[in-house]
Length: 235
Image (cartoon, rainbow, N blue to C red; front, side, top):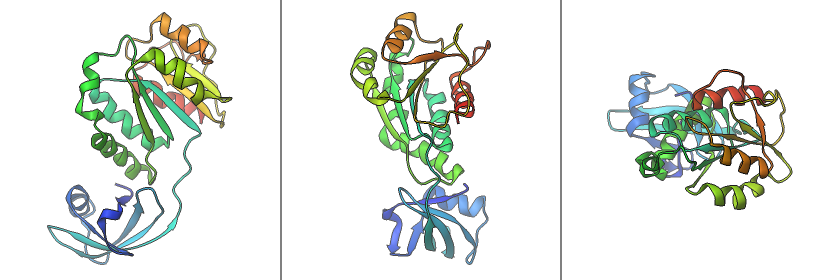
């Protein structure tokens, strides 16, 4: 991890925290940390700064913390994603947090397997765990907002117009469409479909809601690759 994250539950005093579990294991096995070592640290939802290890054992590490730096700015992006299979979702959640996506909406579509919605990965604690791993990698402390929508049509008709407002809305979809723009650096809603793509009805509904279909090229990309490629081009 490039940033040791902690929450208010870890505080012993105002400027002292205790770390256990996965984070302690990482400190001991990866950083091979000892008392007196200093590392980057951040409070979830707050500032980043420096932590000094006061004491470390097999059970707990105690650190003195000094926080004085804000997190990196989020991308001006709302990502709308047809729910992928659970194994891929884990990776995408980490990627979303690493890139600094501000908001993620997971939606249903015709080609989304119904069983995906029962996956333990969608439990709040699980989502947060994978997002935190992405934040640790990118030295960020602000969790992206994540919402789930199990009905496609109500989302497109009732929720999506409010997300778009007067912003740019792009639908990354294979086909004879204009190329995805580059370096737009403005508030954007990006929609990515499922493995196998959106069906024509869904594409028409999204276009009717104000989305412009754009292409990432002639090759058919995996969902996680399409997300990374789109974010790299846009921002």
